[in-house]
Image (cartoon, rainbow, N blue to C red; front, side, top):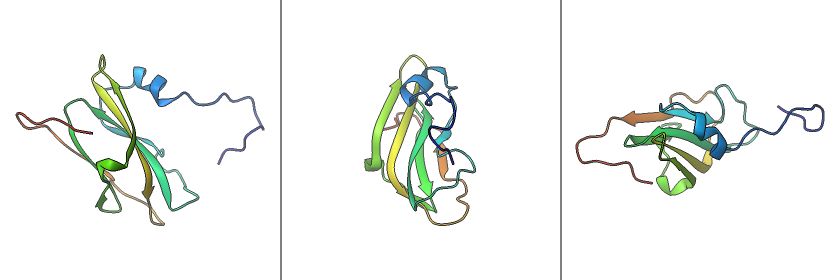
Length: 111
């Protein structure tokens, strides 16, 4: 937990800035690994390589793509960042919420 106004720490960079330096691998960006949430829902930001077919799952349920509130595409680096808004969580540890498959011939990732 962070307490604002107690130190000289600068605000974290935005996703639009951070994507310019990210590797081309899939990853859950937010919330961070091991984060403790104070409410039963949270926004989730994921990084996806261009052309990958992806499914975000929380507590075993697929999160619908209509929950994507922000999509950032870095065409030079060939990656996307999707921010899912208001995804529900249940108490306890959530395991492996990210599933990714390699694209098949003629398929494309859609948002």
